[in-house]
Image 1: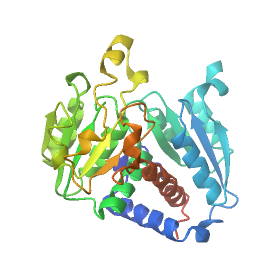
Image 2 (image 1 turned 120 degrees about the vertical axis):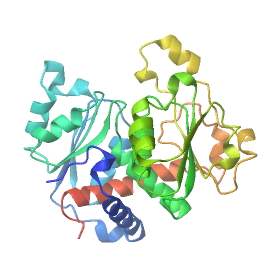
Image 3 (image 1 turned 90 degrees about the vertical axis):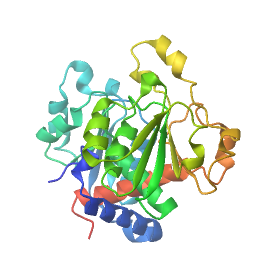
Image 4 (image 1 turned 180 degrees about the horizontal axis):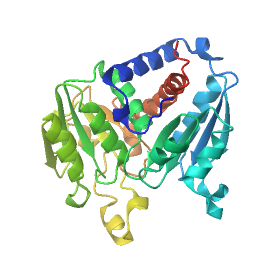
Length: 305
């Protein structure tokens, strides 16, 4: 039995196989409509979610399976004091596979130690979000045709952004990746990423304060929102939340084939006018998330053949 807790749980070959399977699902959707017939996915979301939870549910339903679960901790027995371990142990009696989101880092890993069904980490605090990473990798490969030899700019909340941390780790195994980190000093990428990823793998990176000074160099611009829920001090959030707003004037010096990604939800860090630009990929990215989760569910249930 396999779990997916961290994007590094998957080898490069396994990632490529998942992306190939997702591409095939996109091309031959009707061939996969009954693959998970009789299987059940439980979505245990102890933290609010729209895209991730619904894309998991849509993925399982489009594979012919069924879905059960809850969308907030308020509707679970955790309000009565039940531990995550006990919740997962019980739910794994009812479901064949579990997607779990939790505000505490490491909670899905703890769940994997107790579960009798595969656990998929659907986001744990500011730590990891491996299925968003697979979504991002599929989007990059479909937009660029490759996962190496790219200059990628990460912009916004790089300190608490689990999608950023996960994607950086996953891309570190590909050749020719150059990272540009765009953030205020207070939201810089954590030291452990600099040491364990950039340092260990020898990737070059630079830190800058504005989009304008690097926009012309980027193949990919990965925008993120400043996350209010990760701040202990609301005054700090208010001061930083509008630091970076991508609009049409900022794109005038960008490459014609720039790909703009965003894990969503968007607040105001990308102006609505940018949606009409063909370089805006974030809604295609959201759709790709359903297909890559379909591939992952099949993989962890041993149904990929």
